[in-house]
Image (cartoon, rainbow, N blue to C red; front, side, top):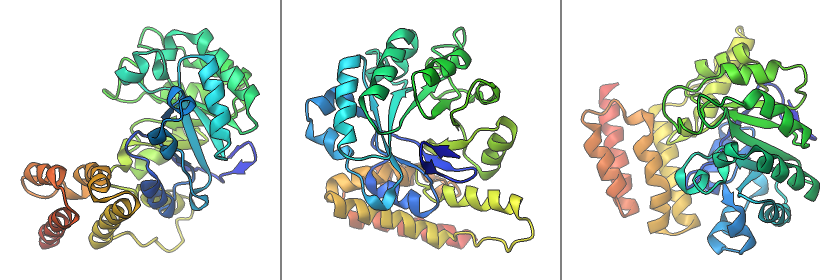
Length: 334
């Protein structure tokens, strides 16, 4: 599977761009465990143009994490074009346009998934951004605004005609937000359309290796983008890749799975990376939502109280102590 000249090989796995999640420390961990494409946190075109420091900081990338994309969102052609030119100076491998974010502060202002109610503007922005930069441009969007407006099959062709080099489709409407189940059938229809020649990347509810294999085999997508299932679980990429490879090469030696100790060590490493990269207070803020969401702690009795303690911890020592207590409890259950 290729986007422009970037060859990802077969069945690649992408890390979804997520605000306050896909910082550089987390991206590097996901890269280590097999993610084929990184994305920064999505950033506002208006904030880029105004040179807001916190936004520009989110655009910093490291050669060790390449290929990496920067995703931008906005609601008018002028700011999106100007922002794309500024982003290009950072030298990402891809510039992605966000037409999929459903949250009110984005979609409610006409940007992100809000563009699903203004298709002419969406196409104008896409066309002009493609013309304005030399970096490959891709798009991420949803099935439509609501279940009465499932427009993705036609929209995919229109976006392709604007010159994008790949399309990511989240299998929900904007109205669904993140509720219900993602509908991959329409993603599959787009992929099977003989007029579509760009890669189609599927996104939504891939939380297990079995689910990833099903998405590739049943719907024929070129790549899978994984989002919320990575919280507190950067090793999900290894789990998926090991499973996919085992299916392709059943006679090969079974890959070595990560142990409980390995996983808790990784979470503690994530904490250290973020504290060293920023400072103790903000580093903890960047990390504790991952810890509280990690599936490895579900077996802890009354984990809700432990989760609350994680979210309230204000020092590395306190948070590490909670993790070590979790390690002890979980190992005693093995």
